[in-house]
Amino acid sequence: MLVSVLRGSFAIALLSMTLALPAGAQNSSIQIKTLQADPKLHAMLPEKIRTSGVLKLATDAHYPPCESFAEDNKTMIGWEPDFWNALGQVMGVKVEAESVAFAGLIPGVASGRYDIAMECIADNPERQKQVMFVDVIYARTAAYTVESNTTITSDPLSFCGLKTATQQGTNFIESVEKILTPYCEKNGKPKVENSIFPSVDATLLALYAGRVDFVLNNAMSVNELKKKAPKPIRVIEVSLLPKRFVGIVINKDNRQLAEALLEGTKALHASGAYDQIIAKWDLHLLKLPEPGINLAK
Image 1 (cartoon, rainbow, N blue to C red):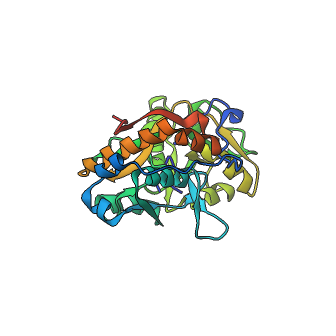
Image 2 (cartoon, helix red, strand yellow):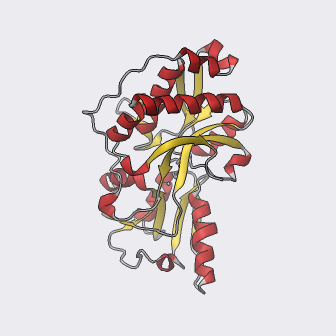
């Protein structure tokens, strides 16, 4: 995603106003129900996964509230860990999650090293050439700048000629190079200068150090970024950028697994567990009412 992923180890959607953004802070009073395994869903899984009882998942656990490490530096917490653990319960398998660099998530699934990947990774046609998606939530993209920078406004032309930083492997690069810059040039304005970094943390450091004017990031990260920023930051609506689908990344040749996980996700909806997870992480504005396969067509 959107974002460290997307970190993509995802990801990303537009903000109507700062106060309307999903907070992304955990509501510890909401407890996710424990689900019973459904034999019919378990039977839908590929034989290799049924036999091992394990679903191998890759993520980049440095992107709250999607996922991050707890204080013990071992336990992954976030809306996606809650989701994949609930999905594993209803599918009757254990989800073994490994944190790797975001850029390695899609290649890791495409090569068969991992069964799936999640990290708020945005579905798009280009990625569908390599992998398949079971889309489970929306993503919104926001622009972040330091509070003292008042030149950037909700007008997309205010971004023209400025410097930005994006994380390698994320669709924020596409947002800059295929949406913002063409819009600027179409209107006779200079392009947006984009520097690509290996991690979302590096893009933010470039912003705080004054080396870039703004960064694009997942809207669901607004509270986490404001809390950890060394100086006040401001969030800007970018209505030119699209709302995206975010989901589970699966090998494009493994339709059986995709269909199984889609049905498992539908079961989470039917049980109320999906709504509980959404409520726990205050992601109501990003809720996807109906999951699906490769919805970004």
